[in-house]
Amino acid sequence: MPLPDHPAAPTPPAAAVDLPGPLVDVAWLRKNLHRPGLVVLDATVRQKPLPTDPAAPRADGTGDAAPLPSGRDDWERVRIPGSRYADLAGALAAPEAGFSYAMPDGERFTAALRELGVGPDSRVVVYDDDSRMWSTRLWWALREIGLHTAAVLDGGLQEWLAQGAPVASGPEADPDTAPAAPGTGWPAERRGTLVDKSKVLDVVNGSRPDRVLVCALGEDAFRGLAPTRYSRRGHIPGSLNLPAKDRLLDSRGRFLPRPALEEAVGGLPADTGTLLYCGGGISATLLGFVLVLLGRDDVTVYDGSIEEWSADPSLPMITS
Image (cartoon, rainbow, N blue to C red; front, top):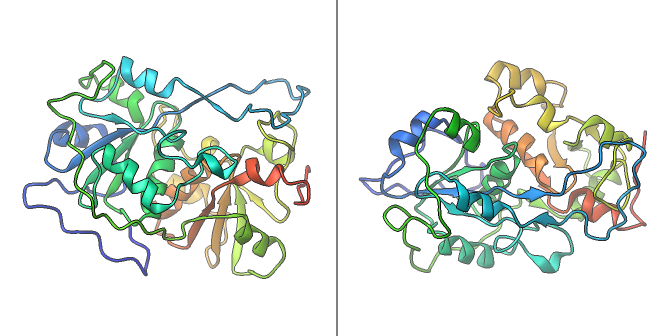
């Protein structure tokens, strides 16, 4: 769904498949898997599990937020045929930013996408094997550069396997189905749907009353009662809390029906812009994706989120 000031999505080639919307199901992808112009990306990232004991020591910024190198390993073991592995923690991130998964500048990001076979006319379906938030993170990043012809696979790899769909394996992309990288010449513009901490400070300081801050972490993390990967526990002052992973998906990792999603986000103001954050700018995109599905366009995500914010002792946090 393009933002109001965005150019229209490019017209697909005559033989290319067109996406039905930002969310596709397994049946649709099975039917269209090998159609021209369709690129399928696995965005799975594995992270070290957090301790479950609320009294566990807090993280101290020594690298606990770093991902495990198992996303690509899992893709090599089992994947949707023709898919490629999109490394959100590596090639599609900006390591100089100082926090995990940072969005690179547009030129670098589009160059990395070209290596995955994604160009400005591509139709992209993103999936993951863990909670849909990695899919929505990549979907949100594609939206940030104006590629609105992308969709998330509902239920991810789990649902694909549960429905007995075909799989592939091996260390290299499947030569018969993986698309070749397109040529150069893709504009590399950032659209402002991923923002930095200056935009958050504007809301905290009261200079943007037309924005509401929403934390997508679970309630215990929001209140500072749960162990964290980051330097400090708690949330940014003035934030509302809507736990994304707890309220938007069913037990099989599929998005809830539209009426249930509308009910889940019903407590968020509808007449203001929404600035979302979480721990690392990942689960916030799950909530952002749902808001866009429901027709809300004025939604942004704080890229660095608590990982960046908590590392700066001059920035306020609340535990309550």
